[in-house]
Length: 284
Image 1 (spheres, rainbow, N blue to C red):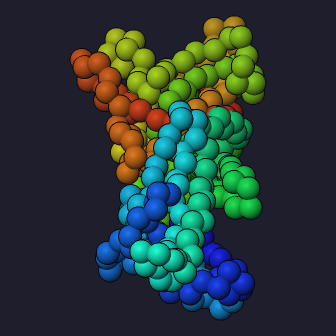
Image 2: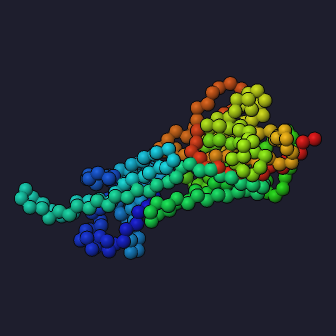
Image 3: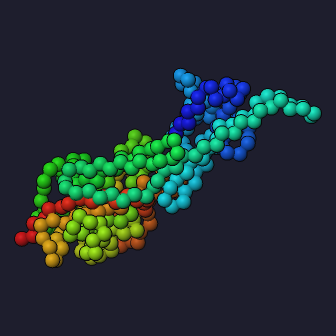
């Protein structure tokens, strides 16, 4: 996370940028920093960049969550100049800023080609993007997505995963809710839910033994295998929808607590997006 400030802003304020630092939104002395996060500005052309890398608790960063968004708050600050018991020539600098990221989304996709959804988060003059792909895979290793048309013979298992495009390890995907409908509308009044509140349906897991939640909240990819089916009054296609949550493992617990029992592993906790996919099934 980087805040970039024009050098002329410091010059016009008669402040030496080398005296400024990141230390939270309350006035305080300069923090020590470390090899990764120095907590001081670095010249970058006409700008001074203040960066926090990987550790979002470094340099006095405050993290606040409200259930739908995560707020990262900090400030560039310093006390510049001199003072004595009678007079002061000190100049106080306190430039507060915050970055806001939406953490709950609903993704819908159709067809068997990998679907990539970008969510743009507007934070005043800054923006961020999460790229989340929901795809069907050839097997439960979830390494090879299926491209193009494909049909399942009921009850052949379907292998599906939601994957966040990220180079770090802090952000995890969580499957909050997954369900099927006979149409592409995720709000169709006819629906069948098999993952809800981050946990697999008990009947699917332990009675029918038709669902395996392989990963949920453990990494950038959450995945499950589900035996294919058709709706009683409809054959040919079903539409799967998953509400996916982006979880910051540095600020919250990403692995859910679900009830025990059954051979099938249960899913994890999450913050959400909804994506939809059309599945072609043959019921002979």
